[in-house]
Image 1: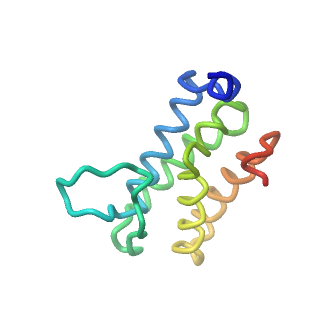
Image 2: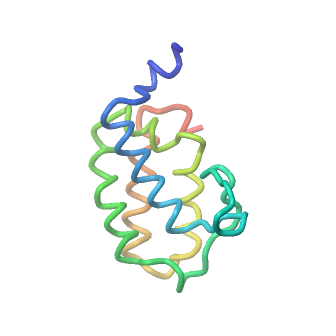
Length: 122
C-alpha cells in the first residue's frame, strides 16, 4: 500500500527502530493478559513499577535508538508505529522523572522523533 511505502515499512531503519520500541515496550509495559495468553504489543495496558524495570537496559535501548531517529525518517515512522514508542516514552518520563540521565536520553529520542514527521509532532 502507498502509506506503508511512504513510511518505509520493512526498510532496515524502520525495522530496527520498531524492534527497539518493542524492547522498550516490553521493559516498561506489563501485559494485560496473564502469562501464556496470546497478547500483542498494542494490548499492553499498564506500566511496570520502577523497581521492575532494568535501567541499564532502558539506557541501552535509548542509546541505540537516538542516532537512528536523528538521521532517518523511516526510523521515526517505525518509532511511532501503533503509537507504542510515544506511549513508552511518556511512561519513562513519568516513572524516571527524578533520573536526569534517563529523562535526557528519552527526551532526546522524543525530540528526534518529531523532526520532519508531522504525525509524531501533531
